[in-house]
Each structure stands twice: as structure tokens, then as C-alpha cells.
Image 1 (cartoon, rainbow, N blue to C red):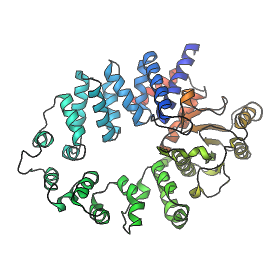
Image 2 (tube, one colour; image 1 turned 45 degrees about the vertical axis):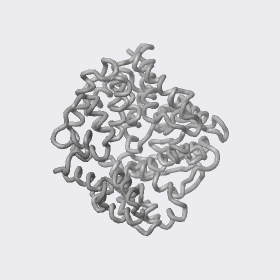
Image 3 (spheres, rainbow, N blue to C red; image 1 turned 60 degrees about the vertical axis):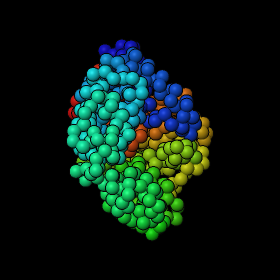
Length: 459
């Protein structure tokens, strides 16, 4: 039987999970970066101090890399945490994020044996340390010094005395050395490194992009696609291979006329990415309706431009792939998702009524929760629906929120009658719908602990 303390613990952990999924400590539409960081720091300290085992276990959830790095730094500063779980989480993080974490550990003076072993093992597992030495040279030097490591072969000389050798046997290291005086050598380097050499040699942007194209990664191709096309070049970006929210952000960054002209290409790429994310679950969710927030606040902030709207657009296409029968309702009443743009108030209540009219099997609301036209209508609609019209809960309702509310230490909720979970990447939506059952009270602390243990074990 669940005690009151168990219920409090379950709620606290879910509150922290929402924050760790959505907040990156950056400015949002309704709060500053300082507010975000202060609120997030308090939550980390509170959960680590009161539930140290569960704090470490949240690394197994789909939290963002910013919070994963904070958790790892806090765990390594103390004595908590499973080293295997930390190592597995590092493997899921982007290399720049991991190197920034190592730099933070060095700056904070965290240099215990466990930290040095973690850095050593992570570097030993890198597929091409010579590539890291060229692309992340300063960060790798810092990590090597901090962990007191001796690198094999030429890497030590390259990092700490790069011009002590007349030549390097490793092709990439030799290309870096030659690029200082030979323009042709820079095209053998990673894009971000080659870009600096191109500027040093006075090479025009058009010539540089045309010749460096074979070296571009998928994300670099997407990032440069529009600017390159403006110059008459094609980076051959594989849009369908991109993560859903990143692809949605790219689509929303295009002018309306460009979206119209490239409608077939963009919609096809979004549907292909959604089908890949849905996998074997495609078409298995039955009847699904979605209320999608494209109000003015979905702009986000200058540092997270259109991020909430991109999440809504990505969820729209993923839900379309998951559902057997799907209906997406935008607050603006637009019927073309590719023309979505942040505008107008947030009349969530009316659109929730529209979505519930057909009694779908599942209603997903994707919104930052600032219901203001009129204020509070959505919460009242959901209360009446749950208590009077559907007390048996035949229609599942989940609110997914891409924005952390610093003042509430949580994502903003529409109603206590429906579960609210934070979301960052649309690919996490199926797992978040599963997590919502804990927020709704249909599962208790014991099941939550078991769920976290299963995720930590990779099951």
C-alpha cells in the first residue's frame, strides 16, 4: 500500500523528470535564462539530497544532455551513482557536450579516481581519437591533462607540441599540419576546422562550400542547406534522415513561399522521419486526436527560436504515423501544418472541445500550457469531461509540454485531472505517454522504481 511519503516521492521524481527533459537553462518565452538556471539548480540539489538513488536513475530516462551532464557532474563530485549507468549515458551524449562536461569537472576540481577512470575509458572507446584531436583539440588536451593520461603514438605530440614533427604518419594529423600553408589540404579536414583555415587563406565561401561538401556531416548539410542553395549550391542534405524536431525546425525556418514550392519534398521528409521514429508501432495507436499549439508563445525565445512550435509540428507527423485514425487540430485553425507560424492567443479550451467531440481513443495536447483565451477554459473543460462525461477514462488524455516553467519548478499544467509530462524530442513521445501513467496516479512509487531500474538496465 502506498504511503503519503511514497506519493510525495513519486511526485517529486516526476517533477524533476519533467524539468530535466525540457529545460536547458536558456531563456524561454515567459522566463529569463537566469530564472531557468536558478530554478533548475534548486531542483537538482533537492532531488539529489532527498532521493540520491532515484536522482542517479533518471540518467536512464530521455532527459536532455544539459541535465544529464549536470547529474553526472554532481554524482562524480560525491560518491553516488552507478559507474556503468554514467558510462552508458556518456555514450549517448554528443562529443562536444561530453568534452564540455570534462572541462567543467576540471574547473570544479573534481579529480577523484572514478572521474579519471571514466575519462580514460570514454576516450579509449572513441572510434577515431585522431579526429577528436583535430576537431576538439583544446577540449581533448584539457581532458588528457585532467585524467593524467599518456596518449599513444603521435597524438601526444600533436596535442602538446604540434610543430615538433616534420610530418605525421596519421593522414588527418598530417592534413592539419599541411593546411597551415597548403590550401588543398584543408579540404581533408572536418568542416568546422577547415572553415577557419579557409578564412585564413582568403578562400571565397562559394568555392569553399563546393569543395568541402564531401566532408559534411548530416547535420552540417542540413544547417548549410538553405544558405548554400541561395548561392546556387546543393549540399545534398538527406532531410528524411534527420531527427524529427531538428527537421521540423529547419522547415519552420524557411519562408512561406519556399515551403509552398518545396511542399512535396518537405512533407515527404517529415513523414519518412516520422515513420522511422514510429517503427513497429506505426498504425497501432487506434483513434488519436491532437491539439497543437501554434500561438504566439510557441515562438520560444531568440536562443530557442520556434522550438515549441517545432516540437508541435514534429509530434503532429509522428502521431499521424502512430495512429490508425488521426485528426490534428491547430489553435490557429490552419489546416496546412507546413505553413504553421507563431501567432495569436492560446484558445486551448475550444480546441479541446473540438477534439473530444469524436471521442478519440487518445487525445494528445502539445502546448506550453499558457491557456489564455479565455484563461482557464481548458482546465475547466478537462475537469467536466473527466468528472461528468467520461468518469471511466475511456478517452486517454495526455498533455505534453515542451517548455519548463521556472516559477513553478515544473512544466505548466492545464488541469490536475490529466497528466502532464515534459517533452523535448518527438521521438520520445511514446515513452512519455507511458510515463504519464505515473503522473496520473495509475501507478505508484514501486512501479516507478521498477520502471527506472528497467530503463537503467537497458530493458
